[in-house]
Image (cartoon, rainbow, N blue to C red; front, top):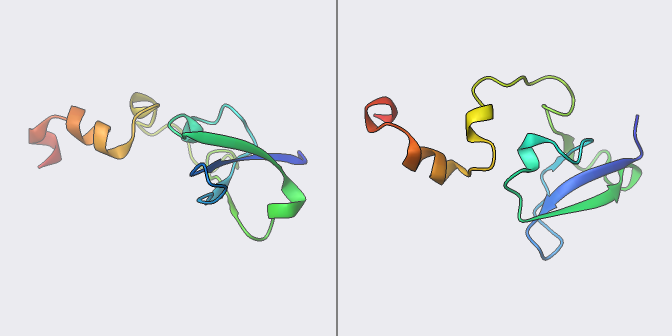
Length: 82
């Protein structure tokens, strides 16, 4: 287990919801600010990212890497979105 984790913040130091063990985790792609933290300081306070934990696979995520939810919806076919 690595001692370093990565968290996306809102730039003011807050906003981190998940811990990431991989700096290149696709879930961090659209983050404005990613900071490196000591895992021991955050463990028990933040949940580990499901993708970094190996619980979540690609399941169509790859087509949205780097896009936020809004951009993905705007790019989606209106017939599919409903």
